[in-house]
Image 1 (cartoon, rainbow, N blue to C red):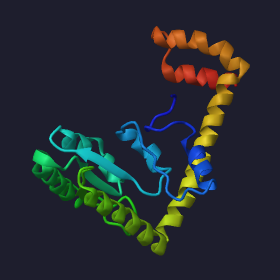
Image 2 (cartoon, one colour; image 1 turned 90 degrees about the horizontal axis):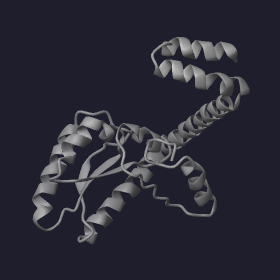
Image 3 (cartoon, helix red, strand yellow; image 1 turned 30 degrees about the vertical axis):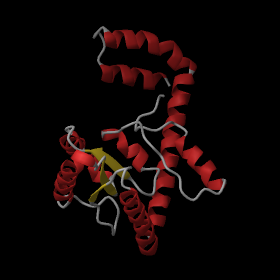
Length: 201
């Protein structure tokens, strides 16, 4: 609630708590993301995008641009009559990925298929995650991402605190309702409204 990007506002803190408790693998599942996936991208080491074939998701994924920030794509439910569709979708994603800049330095993003009915595909998927971990730790990209994420987290917390202080300010609480009404009634331009509020502060 109150947060975009498919994750909760305290997801980062929760992950730190899990790490402090000794868990070395933490899975962060989003509620389903699009353009705002950058939020979860900024808090994880490895970004796995799970797609399905035969539901129009291929085109939607490309339109949203979420595949540009993924470290690995996998087309799920690759079993039964859906195997060929899943493989075709995977090949199409690989074709698109060949034109995109990798999300992580020194790592080539590609697409696989998987199914809960084929445990070997899940094993292969996890091997890719481990390969990514080894590759990025050896190259320094892993630590570089962690440092960058810490800075992003700090900036996000500063913005949140500034916004909270803004709305708690007595002058803002006094002025904002009337100014908001004027903007809604189109008797006051939004830019002028913002300037008026900021000048009052």
